[in-house]
Length: 330
Image 1 (cartoon, rainbow, N blue to C red):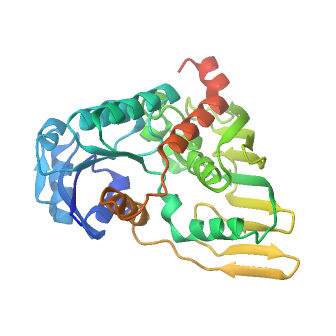
Image 2: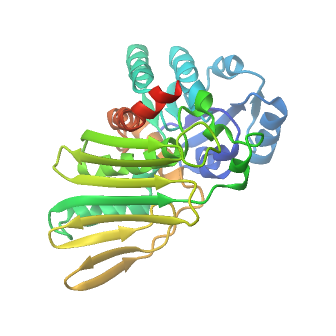
């Protein structure tokens, strides 16, 4: 088995703990070089994480023939150009979610990677996290009987930086993120539901902005249906006065209840009682998924990430946000 040698584009918050260490802590994996728009940040990351090469540009990183694969850890507006640049340099591509700003851009990335003969992976990393694999095991084993419907709720208070346009994070700027926190966080839920129940084939959504803190949506409701027949309802609001994080999967013989964005115990509730599964998140939440990519590239196992489902998740988000984007000119 060979060592997969990685380059990383982007040295921001997501790379610091969630993903970056996974590239050098996973088995048969090494992080050879990093680059970002800020050379000081790049050098600092390389020094703190023991990365041998800090590059001043993407071109310099891609010119290293020893790098096999590239992780694109930048905001969505740069996903497409950087993914295509890496693919055309002959590197396998691992890109942060959402794959791109719109469904059409996702399809272009998929097509170019296929033309260049390189593999493409998208960072819907929860598919490899033990707690979500436990939920899948319960569903697949028939623990709740036939799955019928899903209810997902994510409500949050505004973060302090959301309260002034002078301090807005890039995740709330349409020209950079393509949408708001629904696109940044809610899309993870859409992907897991695809993982559990198959493709979402029909979706209807309403997006609005009630607080006026920024231009992207702050409240979203959606209903959808999977090809398996499972139906879903979701409510996402990021400007309310309380926090709530809850997913409920209802079947003919029971239900599964859990918080999506925490690692509090999962609950399997049936006529026989309530079973809890306490499964803490790994220190580096992307590491199990990164390991699966490395194993896949080495022909040892199949990564649970599905490129076509990643594309579908962007299509679903596009459908939900379509009217709001059109009304607000982005």
